[in-house]
Amino acid sequence: MNIDRLSRKLFNRIGYPVLVSGIIDSSWFIHIPAYQESKCVNAFECPPEEGIHRGMKFWNPRIPKPCRKAHPKEEKWTCYLAPFMYPHLKTPVYIVQSLFDEAQMQMSKVPLLTGGTYSKWAYIQNLGKEVARSLQAAGGVFAPSCLDHEILTKNNWVHKMIGTISLVNAIKSWDNELENDLRWCTNQIPTVWIIVEQSVEWNSSLYINFIGYEKAFDSVDRRTLWKLLRHYEVR
Image 1 (tube, rainbow, N blue to C red):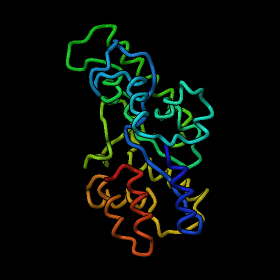
Image 2: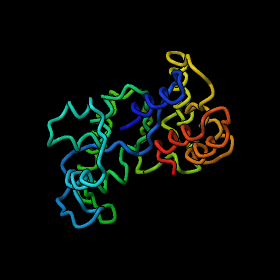
Image 3: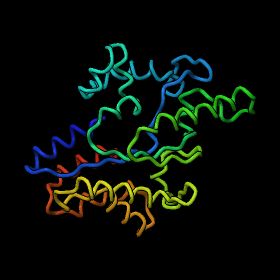
Image 4: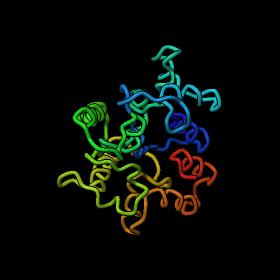
């Protein structure tokens, strides 16, 4: 949500333009009618709309102006869902998202530990189609037909494939396009692909290497870089 603001802050802090790009893992939640109704008795059972509305009272949110202006006041909560926020972003963002993400299933109140019925499997199949449809306008996507949640936090993420295309090569191809089109600034701040290469070489999760770069770039103000890493939810 705040990657454009982060890009502007980096420019103001560093004093010269830098290319900022992002990668999100398993955060592309769509808004469709739930499989079954639920009451907001806890954080896991609360319907998304009600849960976000409650959270906004405590979060003091800084919803970016383009998304805020695009929706009436009662629908501003939708800016917390990636399909509603993504069209308003200017910063390149790569999306890694399972079509049948188990967290999306939970949010849609699909019981995964019980037996299957025709209506249940029909709902799940439609859910996957709706996720795929919502991703069609994205500039860079890796969306396998599986249940995985948080793909990049696992050490085996480098082996993820869709047909003959690996996640590693997909990210590399996307990053190369950015390099050809946009990379006119500095190599001091690590790009997504630089961190991916290190993750492959060290057989580690992607997030671990985001943390590692906080110590690796002495030529960059570490407080600024750490804020960048925190934006990608590395804490």
